Each structure stands twice: as structure tokens, then as C-alpha cells.
Amino acid sequence: MPTLRKFYYFLPPAWRFLARRLYYLPVDLYEGLSGRRGPMAPPRGLIYTGSGDFRAQGEKMRQYLIELAGLQPHHRVLDVGCGIGRIAVPLTAYLDERGSYEGFDVVEAGVRWCEKSVSSRYPNFRFRYVGLDNDLYRSGGGNAAEFRFPYPDGDFDLVVLTSVFTHMLPAEVANYLREIARVLRPGGRCFATFFLWNEESARLSRNNPHFSFPYDHGHYRLMDEQVKAANVAFEETHLLREMIGPAGLKAVQVHYGYWAGRNKEVCKDFQDILVLEAR
Ligand SMILES: C[S@@+](CC[C@H](N)C(=O)[O-])C[C@H]1O[C@@H](n2cnc3c(N)ncnc32)[C@H](O)[C@@H]1O
Image (spheres, rainbow, N blue to C red):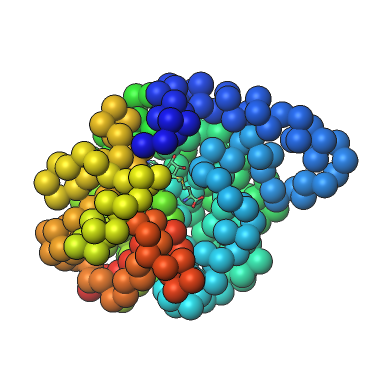
């Protein structure tokens, strides 16, 4: 694993947030004071959810939700692990007054930014903070493997998880898949990204020192043994047969990403995308 990433994982979650905040402070001050940052764009130092162009990535994902998962303007959407609004912000320009959005996350700062910046302008967009444990993003909290989503059965047309199952452990993912099946209407869809471990990704990733999963736990693999949620890959067949199927979902599309070393030109995204359907 590259040394910089190793060092980053070594820091406690609160220190990682602080380091990011301090690193971007000058540019955040400049963009804030000069009015260059729009009201629906978080300061860079608050974007704890990954690198890359926040707005462009969000818009790309919105397009995939429409093209691959069949999202329509009147749909009711659940964004699990909504972070700091990367999916919510572009959806404000797509869902109409009949549609609605719910998001929840374990990091309070992201949820509060979304409430202040998004819900205040779009009341049909709501966000919740849930205090669950995740050793990459926070210290301590409840057990995600036992968490019941705070929504009634069959409440949603679409559930979205972008780069969330890539930071969760098998018992947590299994519970979330069951909860997704419960809160989706029959025929509703789930758009979720993963790192899928199969023969091809195993072979390719052997030659990719920058992004690998050296710790083998049987049906899943870890990038870092100390910070388990840093990145998690799931053995594809096991995930489909033993987790997704029994949850009451069926995989209707798979789009492999380029994380392991596949040709970037032909992949939709860095991570693998699964589109699931509720039975
Ligand atoms: C890489 S970020 C992606 C955020 C957002 N989905 C996006 O695409 O910008 C992963 C997110 O998952 C959240 N997360 C981790 N464990 C979670 C859990 N058990 N339930 C809900 N969210 C969780 C983290 O707090 C973080 O916001």
C-alpha cells in the first residue's frame, strides 16, 4: 500500500477530518470570500468522502441512476451513506415536486451541511444522522449489522449506495441488503457500488500495487487490517448467491470498474456497479 495512504489510515478519524480542513483552509477561505463557491457546494475541507471533482462525479452518478437504474423525476429515493450531498445536490435539479429524497449517514458534519444547504432550499430532501460505528469514518457507535432503517416497508422506488458497501464489513452489508429489500417497493431498484473480487480482478490487481486487497478473509478481502473499513472487496459469487439473493434482491446488471486495472476507457466508473431489483 502506498505510504501516504498508510499514514492517512494510521490517523484517528477525527484527525483525518482536521488534517483535511487545515490543508484546504486557504483555498476554502478564498473561494468563500470571493463568492466562487456556490451555495450548494461544500468547502473542499469538508468533503471527507473522497477525492475528485465533487460536482462532476455527482452529475455522472445522477446520469447512471437515470440510465441504468431507471430513476424518474417523481421517484422517492433513499441515499444510504449520503456523505456530504454528492448525490443529493445534482438530484435537486432532477426530482420534481412529486419526488422526494431521504439520506442518512454516520458522519454528523456531512448530514448537518446537507440540512443547512440542501433541505433549507428543497424541503422534499431530508437527511438523518445515525450514530453507527465505522472505523474509517468515526470512533465508536451502534452496530450497523443490527440497524433497522428508519423508514416503512416498500417506501422507496430507488435506493442508492455510492462507495458505501466498499467501506462496510460482511455482517453489516448483509443486514443493509435485507433492509434495502424491505424498504423498496416490489420491482424497485438499488444502485450500489462494490469492489467485486473474481478471477479477473484477482489476476489484474496482482500487478496493481497502488490499489490492492492483500488481506484474505475468505469471502471478503481487506486493504488494511488495522482500519478494516478502509476498503473492502467482496467475493462476487458469494455476494450474489449468499447475500444478495437471500436478502430478497436479484442482480439485474453488473458494470465492472477499473479499480483492479481494467481498461478505463470501457468502464463506467472506478468501482464496480451492481443494479439490484426487489422481488
Ligand atoms: C466514500 S463515502 C461516500 C459518500 C457518498 N455516498 C458519496 O458518494 O459521496 C462513504 C460514506 O459511507 C458512510 N458510511 C459508512 N458506514 C455507514 C453505515 N453503516 N451506514 C450509513 N453510512 C455509512 C460514511 O460516513 C461516508 O459518508
